[in-house]
Length: 156
Image 1: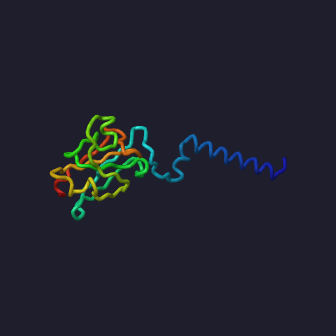
Image 2: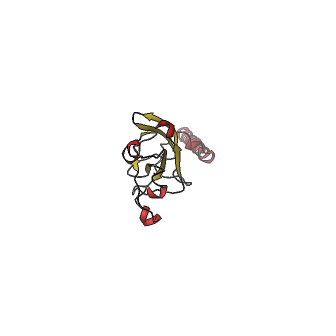
Image 3: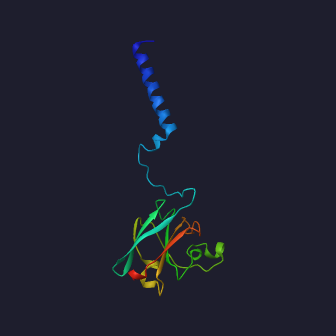
């Protein structure tokens, strides 16, 4: 083998060893930042309201989620808890849960959102508890056991 071929063989071997070590130690997964996926993790899509502030006549909410919302895929539904249950805020309310369909606002604003539409303060009536949950592309709540509500009364 010529000196050039020997050098190439050593270089290839060194690269293979480094790649193998990176794969075995998991280092390869931390070399580049991966964008947050829209798909739900194994334990389900979860979204929480971290902060509520007044924004004119509406509420400004700050969310923390374990997925990236996209209204054409997995996204958020926001509603007033005193007016509707989590089972009511999806298109499958009657067919799956046997309850009358309620009203909610669907969106993918993240992490900041200002209430509007069916989640507007102008349509809440006497409700003071605002909620959020993850929904699928068909606007069905992904898991009715995973939702988050906060008392917004001091901001109304």
